[in-house]
Amino acid sequence: MKQYKMVILLLLSGFVGFAQTKTNSIIEDFKPSVLNQPGQEYPKVNSQGYARFQIAAPEAKSVVVSLGLGGTKGGTVLTKDQDGYWKGTTEGAMDEGFHYYHVTIDGGVFNDPGALNFYGSTRWESGIEIPAHDQDFYALKDVPHGNVQQVLFPSKSTNTSRRAFVYTPPSYHKDKDKKYPVLYLQHGWGEDETAWSNQGRVNLIMDNLIAEGKIKPFIIVMTYGMTNEIKYGGLASFKIEPFQTVLVDELIPYIDSNFRTISNQANRAMAGLSMGGMETHSITLNKPDVFSHYALLSGGIYKPEEIKDKSKLKLIFISCGSRERPESVQSAVKTLKDAGFNAVSYVSENTAHEFLTWRRSFKELAPLLFK
Image (cartoon, rainbow, N blue to C red; front, side):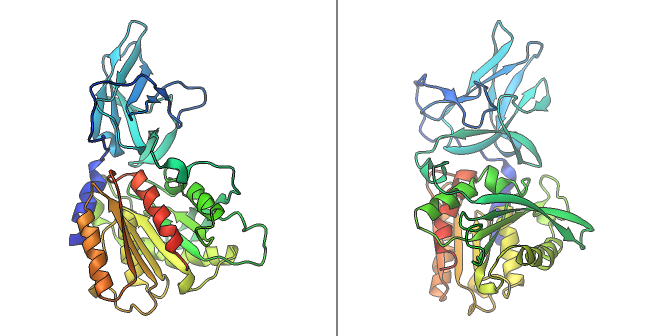
């Protein structure tokens, strides 16, 4: 567990980034965030990455916007105007990409009624998107689109039906005889099986890469990674065995029975961000006959001595943001390469423990899978 200490600290810190370069002059070209509720003007973002908020709370005594997972960083104090609206702009330009936030009104925690909600930090949080300079790869385009569908699969080990979301590529419903490899893709702590398609836009990334001919189409399965509920700060006590049973003994057989999969180890991958990376690390080492491609996105590292049989292992991919521990990722991959593994590292520039890191990481990972 030593290699996970920094990952756990970042995961539980609720990090939200503010761009390192600040300016004394804010450009007044604010536009509604693309994640606003229909017809809502606020929150707004400008071309520099500043965010501006407006909350209607005429009887309130104080209103603070808390940005980041859990809202523990980046508090923006709003000021009340004569019409009863509380307004304010972030102190600095925010990092590009997606951020969670909520509003604290007189000590009570609420979501911003102007913004869409996303499940993070074990609750539905408001979301805001700061346009990224490279956002084209996850943009909604006029290309053939795959399908993201909800499935409910039986789980005897947890005595219930559990939910998963399955992405099938655009060609899936056209050629009824074709079978596909499968990636099992896990979310981070406090999130759920909706995270990769909602916050991560993984389906749009896949659609665009397929349209550009850059990847071999494959199925993605996303399920809830928690079997024993862990409170904030208690991730170190998470036990992998119950979830491993759900994934390997219950979900995978269900997917292979209900979708046209190539149901062998060579065509099955597992990846995860943050806590999902830690789950991936443990399960792939425990079950080397199940998965052949491993990927950790801000989720720790592999060491050569941990892998007992490398003969069937096709790929190890390890990534993080440049504001995390890139030297650890790069060093780990060099060690793996020196030991004869097909290992690849990726570092997302000017990002930390956040979804732009993981969107970019997935974009780099996808073309490497199932070659």
